[in-house]
Length: 428
Image (cartoon, rainbow, N blue to C red; front, side, top):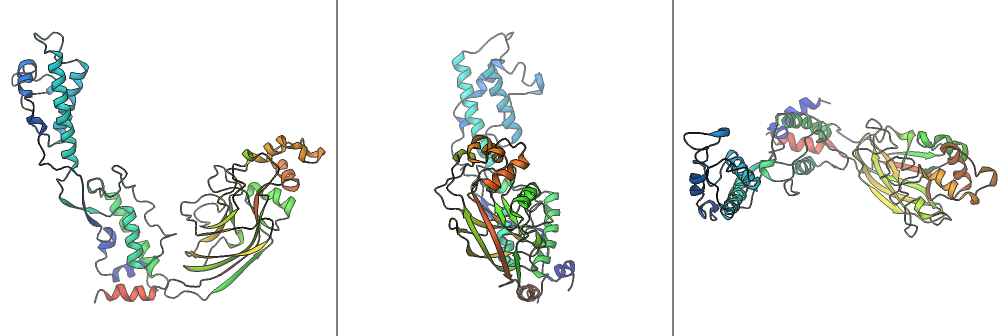
């Protein structure tokens, strides 16, 4: 198989990749019509400046390097906008004209000038932010770039993001497609080049997918390090347990990875995941504030992707869309089927979308608050590790248990052959 660099060379006009795939879009920036009335023409500020300012800020003397008898209005440049704002500031503060000046204007005249220059400044802001309704070229923002990659190469982008190192697109009033803020720095151009190489390798790196196969997991469901001692002692790792949702700040039973399948699937494609699972203790005898979940809602079991080379599989990762979820029956083991897309190297991880807000502090709190519900000789147990053991063995903590998992696939895998023919054929 040729390298990604040589594959890249086969594509016509490969610079399109580096530039964001014809990385320009047309758009209108700014909504101001510059044909509207000029506010600088509605008030004669020159009389005020001649009477009170020109002695210190005129042709003969420019205190503070400021000359006010040549104001360039209406505002068409940033420097003029800053100058007008400075005038407004000193007038509002009463610093100008200074106390030692021979004459001072009436307060109402000063206020009229402040109002006038404020309108001029507002008009200047609009002018500088506008292209007078002209269509401008801009680069693709990150969202558009990802969608373009997916459409052009027919890549499922759920787990593939070549823009993670791109600078963040700047927002204007919550919009990410305003042309004059979508700057193209040298760093971004370098990232386009890096992304292009990754994209071509992704799109053309697998000629044909492997034949479907099946992986079966039962028993030996080792939990994350914080829970491993307790689960081994109480449950002998016979099943996987989920306690909390993904939004916990200190993950402890929020993700259920298959550590024996940490290397992930062998190829991009759809996989069928069947799970024997049950929901336990949705109704329990404890104060509800200990868990922060709603007991009226049935438990949901979801699947998110993870990669061992990105970070610990029992913690949050930057790419983990919810691929699918099911509603579980209470207190009854049943088989549930997920059909999800997984990229090569990703492994499925099970999650509890409506689980407890956080479980780590709950072990000790539950034992202290509801000690009467536990064996008398264990009510004074100290420390989080042994408290976990007591509560797991004798308590009724809301949880999802997974007893068996089967993974089969790829069912429909991505083939680069058609992509290769189409892209390379474009050159002829």
